[in-house]
Image (tube, helix red, strand yellow):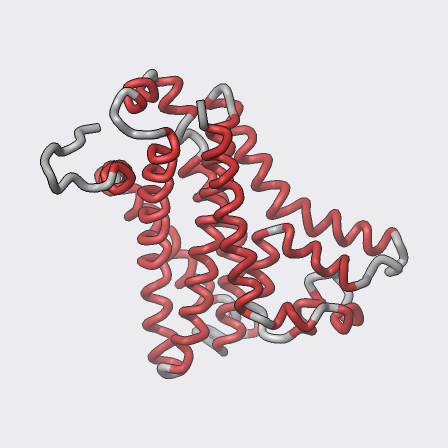
Length: 281
């Protein structure tokens, strides 16, 4: 990692971030992920209503609701695969000791790598959804861009939250293979298992646990926070819990975008903070 000399040296964090981003651009990772998002988002936008005999964007709410499922399944997996070997991979290749030999603290090293990977993930996400944004603007007008922009912003925060979790895994794991297994396990837990477990508890208790406190458990999963942030009514949020009548038990605070944005930011900051703490010598 060359560190420029002279009075105008950039921050070590920015130098590391630029190096990480340059590597992702050089191996065309950003282009590949952007291409995947563009392809799938266009397919969903155009053919999502084909079962009802309609092709093309039918409504803004319907299009965004369809894209939510794409993001929840794909973006966490991409973020976890991007970051799971950030530290453990360097350790196995023997390059971690070389990096630590430079006048860079461990916290700066981790923050620089996270910033570089986060920039690559954000660029690919924005590029992947840009074309759908143009289509929605032409179909529904400029007002649609406000809602769609909120969707893309929350999708980016969801990706960064899983990137932060991947970095924590990479610091904790002793081997690269173990880190990859933990990353896949985490994806299953948050994307597939968490909601089923909540629904099982709800049904198993005969609905007796369906209080406000139970609904707040949804914030313990970044995927659910993202899903709630992009549905349009509290009744739809209640539907996430598996029973339409329970929609009335969903706290009204769930309609507050600031609360949901803060929850996603916490999902970025807390795992990253834990990774920095654990990475200390």
